[in-house]
Image (cartoon, rainbow, N blue to C red):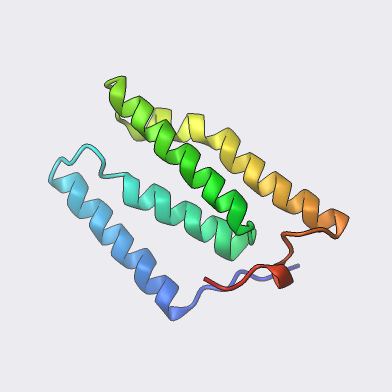
Length: 114
């Protein structure tokens, strides 16, 4: 079983993101959840599943579009964004695992450290 590596810098980013998210929530900022969602997915993709950069960038593009559409629709909330983003998150992880299983790209040796 592969271990998840979390460095001291990672812990700093995690705790800073938690602090920022909490501060934005207390300020009643509508997008208080954005830092947690973005940084959480970054660590999920980079530290846990080693998702290739092209899939990370595709996910990020969909996330920006998804968030923008919910904002335009007047429903700027973490729940609909997360629920509509979930299939793309699962697809990025699934494609990475499938490629690794086939011996293709996306394995840990082929993913540079962030």
